[in-house]
Length: 454
Image (cartoon, rainbow, N blue to C red; front, side, top):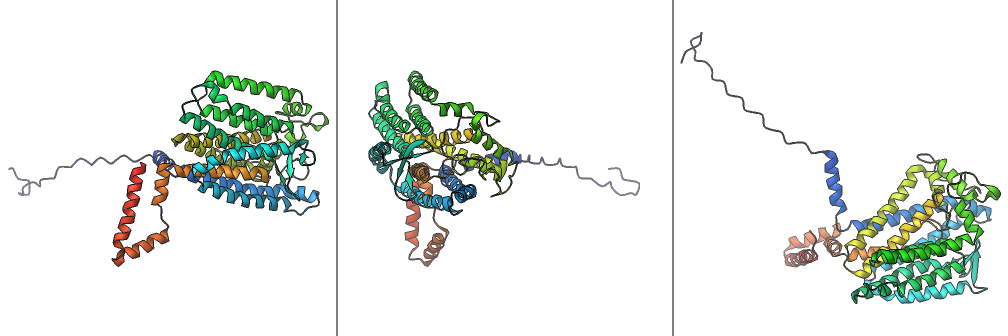
């Protein structure tokens, strides 16, 4: 080996190793999407969406009822919190109904179908009896129950139709009768038309539209063929056209779609001022309690047009939040109906979801000027105890159905309070209580495996 100039052997330099390839960095957007997808597919997602979404809508509705009804109460020489106190009492009673309905087994819900239908029909007949029925805003669909409290039986008719129709279709599906068109229509459609007739005797077109939507939702879930569905829809549209054409009031409401001016005799006053309220709200609103339209300009500010006051005080952010809560509630209801194998649960969950979603769309569409004013409240949000009580019971139904899912039931069984886990750990370290704790966990694990949860 030749030496260097200094006489020393040349230094052998180590060959450079190729740099190790760095692992590709994960896309943060994709990672967030995957995590959200996993959280969305958990067994208890529908349960939490229904429970949390309904409670948030109810609480926000109480706040807005208090804000929107103060001026109306003072104009009637009543305390400023008069309507809020009545709504709060109805929310407390509705909370009890929600809890009871969420804990009732499915067979008990089915047992309530026929008594609830019979009771609703009886009360709707009483509405037309002179001296018992009470007319409000030209519609006679109320019953006075003493003092300032009134009851609207047609609101309970929605719940009765959902339960009775779901039980009827489930029994016919078990007997494989839904393949015949006469069993699919009879007696569901005649009974629904009877309820619609009783409602229309009082002039309540809005509730009749919601009841029709529930009927079509049940028919669609039962797999009605297109020609049958189109036939029933054509009959309903024909009857609706006749009822609207023969009523100047309903024709006036139809003419106010998209109106920007009150028009002759101020027939579009409510629709136009609802748009004014939304337009003046901006992005984040004028502030809670700072609405101008509720000072006598906007009729029914705390009932049918509470969404307009929400837009004025909370802005676009507030209205979009309310719509997002209703969208989450609707998605959760569809998920419960789609993942169950019990036909009654599928029909009942689909009927409740159709009811709440259709009513919210009709109310918001009327406030935005996209639909005629139908006079229906925003579910769980507007003032009105007669509308709040059956709606909260229906939410309890969805919660009960979400809990009945095998994977959700196993996930709920695996949950244990943190305080309970600490106590179990202490007992397990004592020695004597160790085998008992192991047996408990083994039973839970077997239950989880049998339910199919991963």
